[in-house]
Length: 129
Image (cartoon, rainbow, N blue to C red):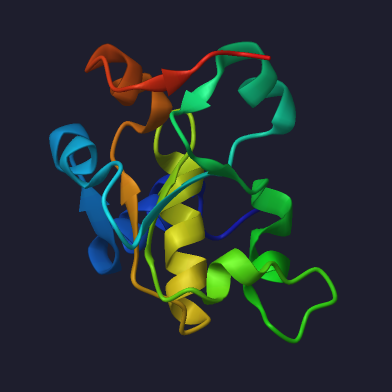
């Protein structure tokens, strides 16, 4: 039996991370020193597209791509940009934002409602592959 479920994990994450509304995220989109990061599975990205210009960094690799000591490190994460994470509904991205903050990485935020909310607000999207 688990002692803490996903709802509690999300509640704890939301208490310490920056959650952007879709409108706030849209106002940052395309801005200098801002990188949008799609953490969804590659199959989701291929099927649904992604926020226009977003970097795809699968959730399972994110901490490894961020850490400069990791053999998987990606230089884009050493730019000092503000990183805006998103997933489909904002759950994975909330947990990911909290994990990155715990690593000392930032500034980082996530989009409340995720890619679903972005689409509903007619944010710019790169078409599926």
